[in-house]
Length: 272
Image 1 (cartoon, rainbow, N blue to C red):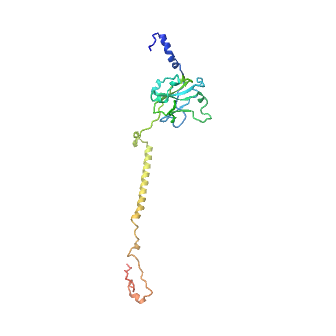
Image 2: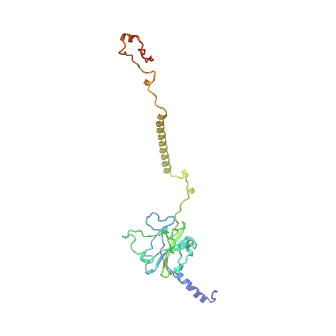
Image 3: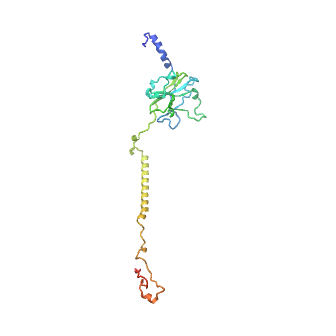
């Protein structure tokens, strides 16, 4: 279809398409990572934002919805605020278009009360936290990579038409694991304390090994090399005594040499 030649008609023809997008109210609020001191505020697949409490106060109706728009930082400029529910991008479109919308909340879920009140909960929105979400249209699925990402909050009415938006956040980059081959194991990269501790542990391990080997050597040497027989138990070292038997007359016993008593085999002399 050709464009009308009359400039006035051209303005009327373009205005209905641009009007909803140009008149969208910008709220002076920028989403940011939660300031609460929590473990895992930013992980390899998730990050935690402050809840937009009172951000759309006075602008949101009871039937409105507050959305989180997640986009790759280099694709955020291409995002077009939806005007119908059918135009709301879903999580699979992050890999194709570079952005999607998730975490739809009603205004009554984000009250203006003090977040540190008696509820005891931590007021945050964890992006990418739903690992079991597969077929739902607005899944909060784990993020596919480190990014970087930019996010903003968007207020829509019941028909899906955008009413107000916040600023885009600063760039958010997720954590990345290191490949084992990229880890530097050269000792020169270690601190002085680490080198000292490592040296002490290696020395203790060496001393324990030497003590074990020494104890094992002493224990098994007694099995292979028996203890030496004492000198007094060796053959030829017995100290014998001359004695008189009761059945040999003393006169005869005196004439017999030791070991030659009648009826007995001669014995070798026990004297040295």
